[in-house]
Length: 306
Image (cartoon, rainbow, N blue to C red; front, side):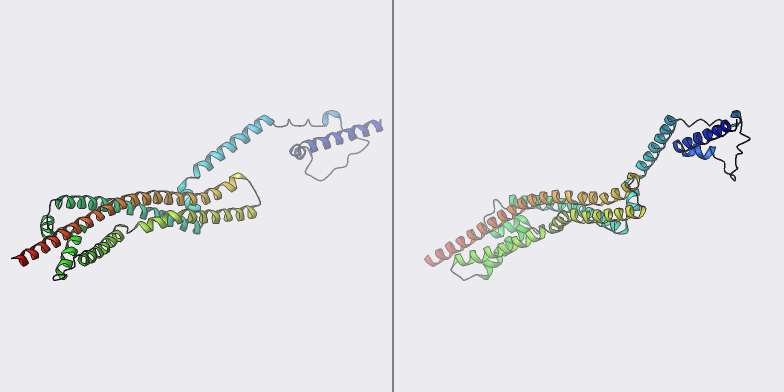
């Protein structure tokens, strides 16, 4: 009788041990928290005195609840990862990089608007001036047709007349034309420098902005890895915000560089067309100067013949 009671107690203890290994939480509920009590081998507890083990929680419900919580937390994280929130939570150096790239983009679009207005105005003005002097027979007549409008063609005509006046009494027409052509080349170069003002800045922004954004990205990713080492976790919810903030700097760099390169190439073509008009104006002024010189030579010969 004593041996059967001992075996029954041993079986109960083994069953509790198996349940504790299968479910730690269940074992914590079954094992007493108070001081240990010695079970007498003589007075064995009745089988009915042993409390039935509580039912284990439903694994499917636990998984579903955990999945819902993870979906909700992911949705909250996705809503929080907006460009503005990423900018606010970025490192101070990454913020400085993004602010600088935003300023560079603002400069790019300012130059675009200003140069579009300027180039449209000067091209239309120069075409109209060339149309006005197309039927002129002399430099004086061409200047009278243009009036006092300050255009590059007016500067070319004034340079031709000044050279003709300074070279009065010189019989060599070739020297006068050569000196006038030199003046025309200087005016054309000055006009090219003026019309290309700001394009060097566009080229600089287009060439350096991706690398500046990449610098901000590298710095932000380094900070993210430092945070990973400190938190000692590779959970995507912890790693993703820092990497997204770093990649935002590259996006800023591309947003500044791509329009700058496109605008620079566009203005290169437009400026080339305008400089061709300047070359046509230089040729027109040279032809008028040549007519005046020939006319003066013929007049001198006529007076000499008389």
